[in-house]
Length: 222
Image (tube, rainbow, N blue to C red; front, side, top):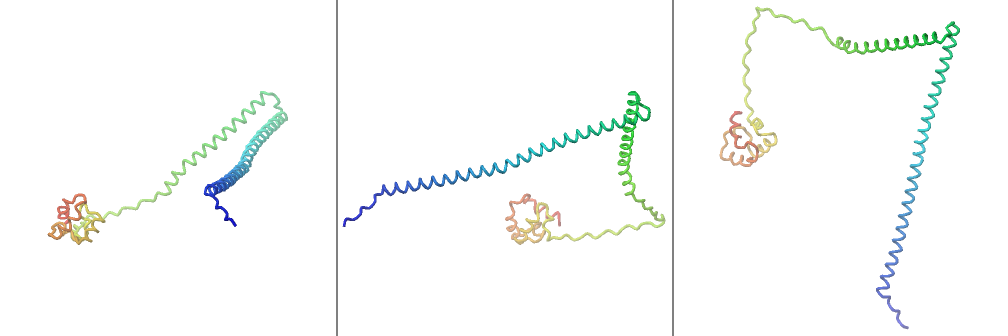
C-alpha cells in the first residue's frame, strides 16, 4: 500500500491565508454592523430630543400668542366698560372721554411715582438705621486725681538668649537648623566661636547663602 504524499508547504500557506482572509472579512462585517447599529441608536436618541425642542418652541409661541390675544381682548372690554360708564354719567363726547382717560393715566403715574419714591426713601434709610442701632453709647472716662503721681515702672530684666535656637542667626532657617543639630552644632556659641571640630562640621553647610557671615551673625545674637 502506497504511502500518502505529505501536503506541500505552499498548500498549507495558501490554506492558512485563505482562512485568515475569511476571518478578517467576518470581523470587518461585524464591525460594520456594530457601526450601523450605533448610528441607528444615535438617530433614535437625537430625533426625539429635536422633536421635543421643536414642540417646546411651538408651545411657547402658541402661549405667547394666546396671552397677547387675551390681553388685547381684556383691554377692549375695559375700554368698552369705560365708555359705557362715561355714557351713564352723561359724559358721552369724545373730548370728555379723552380728558377723563388722560386724568386717569396721570393719576395712575403719579401714584406709581409716589410709591417708588417712598420705597427708595425706605431703602435709603435702612443703612442709617442699622448704623445707628449698632452704635453704643461711649463709656465715660474716669479722670484720675492729679495728686496720685504714677511711679516709674521698674525696668524688666532682659530674657537670656536661647543659645540652642539656631534660627535666631540670620540666614539659618528651620530646615538648616535641624541639619546643623544633627551634625552636632547644637549651640549658637559653636557657630560664633567655632572650635576646629566645629569648623569641620560647618564645612558641610558651605552651600547656604551667607555662609561666610554666619559667625559674625551668631556673635550679634550672643
